[in-house]
Amino acid sequence: MHLKPKVIWIDAIGCNGCSHSFFNLPYLSTLLEKLDILYHPLLESDEFKIQESDILVIEGALKDIKKFDSNLLTIIEKLFVNTKRVIALGSCASFGGMFGEGLIFNKEKLGKFYPCKNKVINLPGCPIHPEWLGYIFDMLIENKPILLDEENRPKEIYSFVSHSGCIRNEYFDWKVDSDDFGSKEGCLFYNQGCQGPFTHSSCNKILWNEVSSKPRAGTPCFGCTERNFPKENLFKTDTMMGIPSKIPLGVTKRAYLTLAGIAKSLKNERLEKRLFEYEKTNNKNRG
Amino acid sequence: MREEKKEVIMRTALSLFAKKGFYSTTIADIAKEMGMSVGNMYNYFASKEALAKELLLYTSKKFGSEIKKINEQNITSKEKIEKIIELYFNMAVNEPEVVDYFMRVYLSNKEIFNNGCEGMLCVSAFVTEIMIFFEEGVRKKELKNQDFFVAFGLFMGYIGGIVFLNNDGVLPKPLTEYTKDVSENIYNALKA
Image (cartoon, rainbow over all chains, first blue to last red; front, side):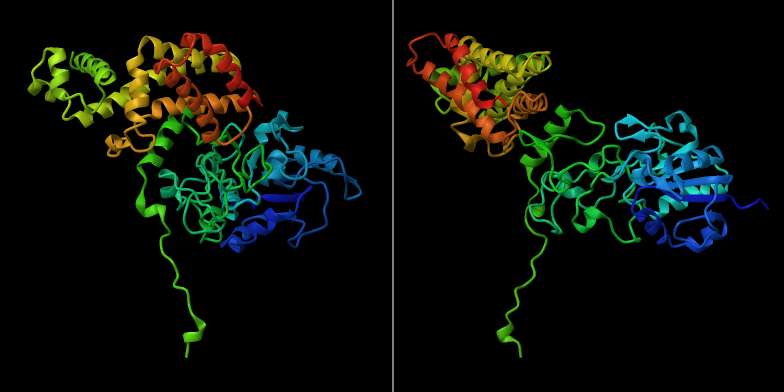
């Protein structure tokens, strides 16, 4: 029997949204039994102190501010050198996100901890999907290798785009756009700001709360797992002369525009109209 | 061989359409001009409508591939506008039957193209290049970000109109002498 990995979970500048998301992991209690949580800001644990750990989870962005009668950056530096692996949890810790700087990446620039990037696993997401962190903990507990992409994100999660598995893909294929916010029909890519075709995540593969995802429910993908998150106007597609300024990954603009023009010209009549209408009820006729 | 022969037939058809009009030209006329039997003509094109569609694809690809070359040059949007207009006007002068087909047959007789050439299906090679030209111009902050069709209509409508006036013999000067002024006006309307 091997010892439980010692975990320190420090909250930097953020909203604790990733913690709350993680608490919805269906097998949370089983997983927590396999970990020795030395400190967590929300779970029951001992008082915070600088000590050695096997896994350091940093939730939130870096900023030069006071923390525990010391300085946040100083504390993180000390914890960083005294741990084996670091999980940069959420978009804030990974890339800076909403509030500050990321550990090894700071939006398009490199972060303060870039020289130690081999220690870091980036788990961007606003918030992270509970299963993503569950998977990483399981791999670390079992001491199994985790393949990372060039932004230190686990390939098992971030090789996909959030577009993969979206139930609106039929509308995307035939270029039928959604005009109304929250409608069942239509693709959200052209008008509603959806960033699914170029955002790395498995949101439509491993559903949220095991039932849904943003685009399934009618909200565009906000691209929260990418370095430039958040962009302005999340509900509006950036266009240049009416053409989406960012196109799906892996194709040239010329190829994409050709295919899009042809699909739009051919028209899918089934998808051009609403799937079904509710009958309007007339209260006067009711008994 | 077969593709080359098809292309010769299409060029012949283009010049006959320009001379006699689309509806007055028969497959038999094209065969006669080619020195082919009518039966053999049908080995290449199943009907006049099929020929009409292939001609549209042919002219669109021809124009599109030339604009692509301009798009790939490292020059400003202003210079690209002038080059595209120069290309179009030169084509109108040197291969009038190509531009004539596009304007007088395709744009004026949509009923021929309703089955198989709807929307952008047969003209995408050309429209895609115009899209790329516009999009890159906006990306480089040289062109104003506006609705695609508003810009497309202004661009193509204007130069098509000038060529139309030229074909009707109304223009006092040779068509190519208008390149600079027309380019200037289009640039002023599209610039950021």
